[in-house]
Each structure stands twice: as C-alpha cells, then as structure tokens.
Amino acid sequence: MQIFITFALTLFLSHLCNSVIKIEHVQVPKSIENDTQTNVVLDCVYTFNENEDNNLVVKWYFNNNTEPIYQWIPNIGSRFVSTYWKSKINLNYALDTENPLTKYRAINLIRPMTELSGNYTCVVMSLTSEDSKASEMIVYAAPKIFDFNYTREIIETQSSLNVTNELSSDMHLNKTDFNKTGATLQCDISQVYPLPEVMIYHVDINGTNLLSLRVKNETKRIGTHSYNVSVSSYVNDQELVQKFGEQKISIFECLVTLPLPEHKPSYKKRITYIRGCIKFRNKLLN
Ligand SMILES: *[C@@H]1O[C@H](CO)[C@@H](O)[C@H](O)[C@H]1NC(C)=O
Ligand SMILES: *[C@@H]1O[C@H](CO)[C@@H](O)[C@H](O)[C@H]1NC(C)=O
Ligand SMILES: *[C@@H]1O[C@H](CO)[C@@H](O)[C@H](O)[C@H]1NC(C)=O
Ligand SMILES: *[C@@H]1O[C@H](CO)[C@@H](O)[C@H](O)[C@H]1NC(C)=O
Ligand SMILES: *[C@@H]1O[C@H](CO)[C@@H](O)[C@H](O)[C@H]1NC(C)=O
Ligand SMILES: *[C@@H]1O[C@H](CO)[C@@H](O)[C@H](O)[C@H]1NC(C)=O
Ligand SMILES: *[C@@H]1O[C@H](CO)[C@@H](O)[C@H](O)[C@H]1NC(C)=O
Ligand SMILES: *[C@@H]1O[C@H](CO)[C@@H](O)[C@H](O)[C@H]1NC(C)=O
Ligand SMILES: *[C@@H]1O[C@H](CO)[C@@H](O)[C@H](O)[C@H]1NC(C)=O
Ligand SMILES: CC(=O)N[C@H]1CO[C@H](CO)[C@@H](O)[C@@H]1O
Image 1 (tube, rainbow, N blue to C red):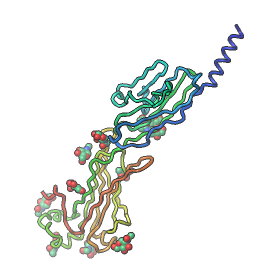
Image 2 (image 1 turned 60 degrees about the vertical axis):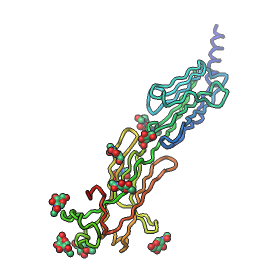
Image 3 (image 1 turned 180 degrees about the vertical axis):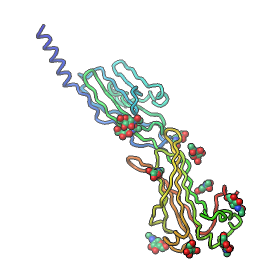
Image 4 (image 1 turned 45 degrees about the horizontal axis):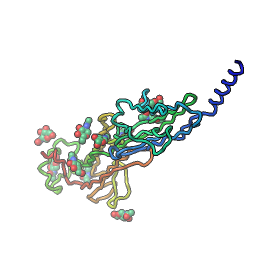
C-alpha cells in the first residue's frame, strides 16, 4: 500500500513537472480603424505537453471583466460566448489546423468598432498548470467632421462689432479698428477616438516653418468611445505683421494626431487668412 502511494505520488509530481502550458504570445493587432475590417483574428499561441495536458480550457477575457467573453473546452467540444459578445464573435471561425487542442483557440471579431478597444487576455489552463497573457487593441476612429475656419474679430470696442455694412472691402476699414482686428481660428473635430492631440500652426507661404500657436481647447465625451474636440486660437493682425512681415496672406494649419502605440494617423486642414479682410462666418452675417 505504502509503495503504491509513493508510486502514485511520484507519478503525480512528474506529471506536474512535465506538463507546463506556456502561452508564447497573444496575437492582437495594436490598432485598427473603426468599421473598416470585415473581421479581425485574436490568436493565443500556446505550447503544452500533448500527452500530459488533458482537460485544456481556453478562455478570453476583456478588460477587467470577471466573466470570460469566450471559453472553449476541447475535450467536451464546448464553446461559450457571453451575451454581449454573441453578435461580435464569429463562432464559425477555426484555425486552419487538424489539431483538436488548438483549432478553436482564436477569437474572430466581426467588423470591430471603437467599443471593442481594450485589453484582451487569453488564459489557458489544464488540471495541473495555467498561463495567461494580455494585449491591448485600439479601434480608432478618424474624425467624422473636421472643420477649420476663422472668424474675423474686432476686439475691445463694442461698436466695432457692428461692422457688417463695411464688409464689402477692407479698404473702408477704420484705422483705429484695424489696430484691434484679428481672427479667431477654430478647429472643430467630431466623433474621433481616442482623444487626439490637436495643434494649430502658422505656416510659411511655401508650406514650411511650422510655428505652433497657443490654443484653448474644449473636449466633449460623446458616448464611451467617441469625442468632440474644439480648439481655438486668437491671432491679432498687428502681431502677425510684427512676426511675419507685411504680407497680407497668412496660412494656418490645424493638425490632428491620434496617439496610437505604433503608427500615428494624422489629419490636417489649412486655411488662408487675409489680414484686414473681413470674412465672417455665414452664421454671423445673418
Ligand atoms: C483594469 O485594471 C488595471 C489594473 O488594476 C487598471 O490599470 C485598468 O485601468 C483597469 N481597466 C479598466 C477598463 O477598468
Ligand atoms: C490595458 O492594460 C494596460 C497595462 O496593464 C493598462 O495600462 C491600460 O490602462 C489597460 N487598458 C484598459 C482599457 O483597461
Ligand atoms: C452693436 O451690437 C450690439 C450687440 O452686438 C448691440 O447691443 C448694439 O446696440 C449695436 N450697436 C449699434 C449701433 O447697432
Ligand atoms: C474711426 O473710428 C473712431 C471711433 O470708432 C472715430 O473716432 C474716427 O473718426 C474713425 N475714423 C475714420 C477715418 O473713420
Ligand atoms: C495701434 O495702436 C497703438 C496704441 O493704441 C499705436 O501705438 C500703434 O501705432 C497703432 N498701430 C497701427 C498700425 O495703427
Ligand atoms: C459633436 O459634434 C457633432 C458635429 O459637429 C454635433 O452634431 C454634436 O452635437 C456634438 N456633440 C456634442 C455632445 O457636443
Ligand atoms: C486640452 O488642454 C489640456 C490642458 O492644457 C491638455 O492637457 C489636453 O491635452 C488638450 N487636449 C487636446 C485635445 O489638445
Ligand atoms: C520659402 O519662401 C521664401 C520667400 O517667400 C524663401 O525665401 C524661402 O527660401 C522658401 N523656402 C523654401 C524651403 O522653399
Ligand atoms: C464607428 O463606426 C460606426 C459605424 O460606421 C459609427 O456609427 C461610429 O460613429 C464610429 N465611431 C466613431 C467614434 O466615429
Ligand atoms: C461654421 C463654418 O463656417 N463651417 C465651415 C468651415 O469650413 C468648412 C470647409 O472647410 C465648411 O464646410 C464649413 O461649413
């Protein structure tokens, strides 16, 4: 009896040592664009001892959720997807392999949207060992609306604001007013994800020498994975003359950059501003 127990224990211990599940890596794209991929595969590449590691269980978790989004138990051929993910995970997907212990280890996300941004953790366990690895995927959205405009401003004198009759030509501008004229440059971005960096630059006539302007910004969260951002900057005409000389034309650029881990998509718009030439937004003219 004693001998048998020792034998069994030895067998058990050797079993414990030989059967080590190891996740080599989880293959998750770092970033993809919202609503552009028909599907995306998140794979969990693990090694194990085929003879020893019975009763494998493969699970995928999303962020810090305690319930797995996907679970596969090869031995009993059971595959489970949690309620929220039923419409998002394609269960017809299988790896191109005959191996019954790896075939369904990957999850196939259908047309991912920004809401699926987050950490994906793969957990593989057997009776005797367990391993897990996580990777973050960001589903980014390019700005849906990206407007860059300026509004002529005549600051300080209240009366100067009532200039609509003089708009036809800058020639009629009162010199005193001209001294206080300038423009508010406004860059409006809507439905973008993640939160972008937005800069406004003064650019040379030939498109070089970017000089960043001080900006004010306003950010609105619209839904969990979408933002509206407005960035504005006031430029004074005299300041422009002092800094860049007498030329009437100034070029400004609004640059929106998404802070992703690998490539950083950026979007830009330029406007030409003519000093002293009043060009109100349509809204203000009415
Ligand atoms: C999940 O937990 C980690 C560490 O505790 C934390 O840094 C992270 O912000 C959490 N994520 C979410 C979505 O709550
Ligand atoms: C994902 O995990 C990383 C590292 O643990 C953490 O910094 C990040 O905040 C997590 N993201 C989310 C959405 O939980
Ligand atoms: C100028 O506009 C302001 C409002 O912007 C108004 O209160 C004021 O009466 C106007 N003045 C004239 C002379 O039209
Ligand atoms: C310019 O405006 C100021 C006050 O707004 C006025 O006193 C002056 O006469 C104006 N000059 C001309 C040339 O219209
Ligand atoms: C602008 O106003 C300041 C003081 O108000 C004056 O010194 C300057 O000469 C004016 N410049 C122009 C271009 O009118
Ligand atoms: C976000 O921007 C869009 C387009 O400009 C606008 O229709 C919407 O009302 C904005 N949402 C918020 C919360 O400001
Ligand atoms: C808005 O301003 C704050 C504070 O200056 C800054 O931390 C943030 O990055 C800015 N956001 C954008 C979208 O530029
Ligand atoms: C840009 O234009 C200025 C004159 O407007 C010129 O002196 C300069 O060499 C140009 N720079 C480049 C890079 O072409
Ligand atoms: C992502 O794409 C969906 C479908 O086209 C769209 O409804 C949603 O507004 C997009 N998200 C963002 C943040 O733009
Ligand atoms: C409010 C406003 O004037 N928006 C305009 C900004 O400029 C774009 C073109 O770049 C126009 O389409 C918008 O109507």
